[in-house]
Length: 289
Length: 163
Image (cartoon, rainbow over all chains, first blue to last red):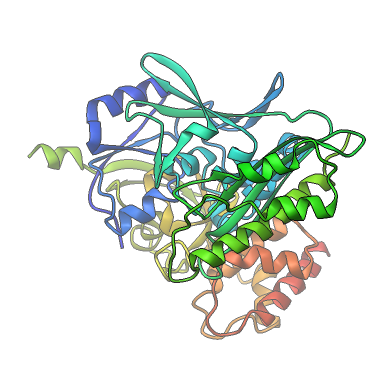
């Protein structure tokens, strides 16, 4: 199998890539690691006339600390997110999510920016980045703008980015002392994609009561959804196993899961409550001072 | 007419098993077909052709990747290592030896990819546990052996490489 013919242009800078997408319009497509786009092109689900490669743009890879944020370049591959000391120290849940995507070879090529821009409803990063309240920095010819995770994933394979914008970096707030994060995933046994997954960021006081909680669930809708009822239930409470279990039962409230041949809606809703509990418990274990 | 110009072949320069190759390729040429059809290095196999089975695994700048999901133009300027690059003359690489010693193959179709993934594992983790080996092989499918002997082959190779 091979894609339909296309022209290939290796971009040398984000500015050049922006000019190229302006020039080619809907016939142009940005290439990052290619681990969603190339398979789609081989199946002829996508047949862009021009591929604009961001892989040749310097400066878009790597993880660095910037004040109270971690900044992850959009072209950073999953392996490097999973093994980053900064990520493992400050947001271990994100390293966990990166380490369960696809397989070793996929993680060596696939990029965090490509994954979130593709916005597959069964992807891992969107869920954990929503739990971590990440911000997506996109560049256009008129400058940069930042889009919060809650506004970024708008529909199936759809984000709040405009066609004339390029995602350059993802900014993840470094959680305060007493915080822990975790990612728990039920993978499809054949594909490894998310059936249901949960990301949790928990902040507690030394006394044990919860001061902040962000829980995101994947697999239930067109993108990650916040488990708001669970978050409210945890707020200000002592994080006992009973309270966590009770809060987690509300993780799928107000969701309308998409049924597929592997999992029905009721089953997904139930699994969401189980994986929300697992993620909260694991996050709490990491909530050190 | 414009389309013909637009899709013209592009020059690539790819170093494969320490030998630099300059070639003209269509942009849609996948790395695995560049290796097999341009360089006639047919040890790298095409299995599922859908990024799942890992038969096409090679090392790209030292990392295991699925060469059916990489464009040759993306590999321009890079170092590629294939199964043909492992043996030194008649002397097999320890991972190749391991697969022979522990009967890590039956039909052999998945074997080049298995070996390249195993080598990547042992280069990053010289003493993997059985679980770590199984986890590392997630992206390589074998439809003959059931993996038991493959895991033993890699354990044998790890012992040998540690010396």
